[in-house]
Image (tube, rainbow, N blue to C red):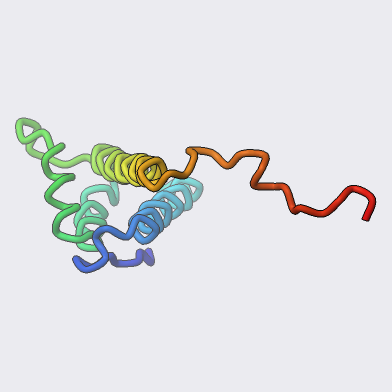
Length: 122
């Protein structure tokens, strides 16, 4: 299973984090299509996935871990990982909208942005 690694320096790079998640999901679907049971590789994959994430992301995901159960489940890890990525994507979207408003830009482009200035008869 080839999974890209996100270093601590890239911890805020959402594209790289999303690529890791998508690659893991794709590989898991491939294993399921080969009728390989999750129980036979789940506990091994958890450590592999965590080793490809930056320290900060591992810490955040670990906060979602239920210590009473004592054992990570792959589904729990993936849900926490996906949730963190989606939260960061929403935060990035909101900050872009607020920045645009602060800079005096409208939230959405208006029809005036499409106007080229050419006359209709030219």
